[in-house]
Picture 1 (cartoon, helix red, strand yellow):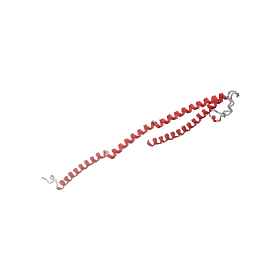
Picture 2: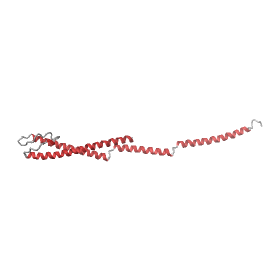
Picture 3: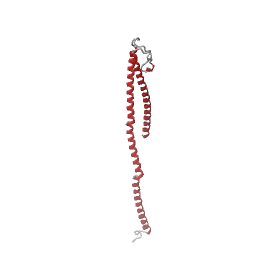
Picture 4: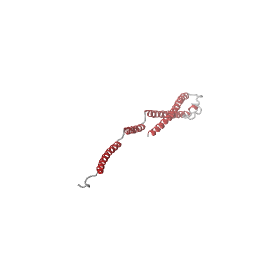
Length: 184
């Protein structure tokens, strides 16, 4: 045999070293694949964060849908405002009717009634001077004027309440808009 065909001592040691390196490389590749697999899987913190994010999105959707619906407080305020508007309209109609009656009485001949200048019945009922009454029509009119004065005073009080309630309602609406915009 020739010396060329036999491996030298250094070749067998190099082959052994090469086999060791190949085994180490295989282990490193396996470990690298395991690390890649683990890196592609979310950790428990990521899963919890994604869950929290989904819950927060659901809450925002719920808040948006709730914000578009009137609450019971808003509905009751709107109903009360409508009722106050209806009451106000009714009182205005009653005052207009009283104005027409006063104008009719003012147009009667002065022999039947001696009331002085009545002024505007709708806006100045309190200016009526009913002291020089000389006929039964005037007595009835005085009672009706007093009743209308009470209605007017009651309506003024209700209108003040209505304005206060409207102001509070506007503040609540602004607060709801601000809260809604912060939620978005």
